[in-house]
Amino acid sequence: MTRRAFITGITGQDGSYLSELLLAQGYEVHGSVRRTSTLERSRLAHLYADPTLYNQRLFLHYADLDDPTTLRRVLNAVQPQELYHLAGQSHVGLSFEIPETTCEFTAMGTLRLLEILRDLPEPPRFFHATSSEIFGRPTASPQTEKTPLAPINPYGCAKAFATQMVRVYRASHDLFAVNGILYNHESPRRGENFVTRKICRAAAAIKLGLQEELALGDTSAQRDWGHARDYVRGMWLALNQGPPDDYVFATGQLHSVQQVIETAFAAVSLDWQHHVKFDRHFLRPAEPLHLVGDASKARAVLGWSPTTSFQELIQEMTQAELDQLSQGERRGTARPEAR
Image (cartoon, rainbow, N blue to C red; front, side, top):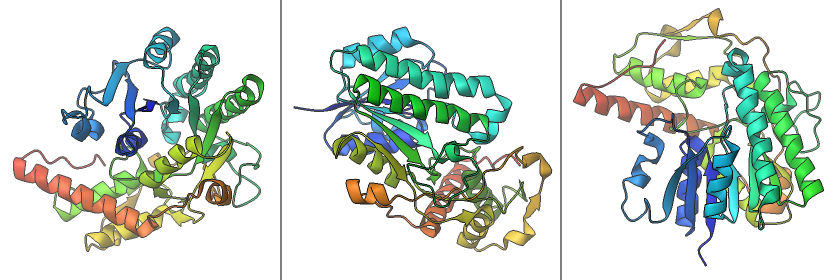
């Protein structure tokens, strides 16, 4: 019997990689898209351009996290065995600008989904993509599944609420519900407003003469960065091995924004010092410290471990930008990242 999976946020970075993984495993994959979503859906273009997949084993449905009636209707029609909840406002810096929207989609959107699931006759296994931002400025490092929640930004607060509600519904309503505590994970499909993508794209654009400089805020900020491909594999393992529980997915290694800069510019044989400048407009009101994860539980229970190093990740992202911009330049459509 073909297993059916439903993905909220299917058009995002994680959704596209997860779709590829599930399709390769023989799944029938359904995903929700917002009516305001771009029609291009470039991260899925290679999938829905394939007539053997699109509307055969890959299906897209219009549904919003703030529209529970539509969500309920779609889920009743699809009847998935697995539901991966990846959608929501996921940009930390932007959450300071639109805190209500962030909480509406990231916190309340998750609660709406849980309410729908508890009413289904056969609830699917549920994966919630939460974030290391729930820990804020932890007193202990590295963090585990037992580290107290202490968020310091609107995004982290919204994710902390959603994380706790998943735990409540797992315990109170006997749902197979998993929190995947995902540390920063990147790829060539990362949104252009995230700092890693911004740096890699700028390095490529400067190499091609399409951009002169890159303005950044605090380059000493550190993160535990991994590859999205590795993390979506963890999502699948969490729903298909062992009882429902919470898992940290992380590399266990800290790297700074400065190291991203140096690695990206070295990948295109440029001296970053000639092109990068400080701009206080990019500073955040509150910056998390020492967010580095201990994924030993995921290793022991799920057999999961990251396979792509930090250097390989940044080099892959930079090369992808170089290839894309070079093709655009040949077609006359190259567009550098806004400074």
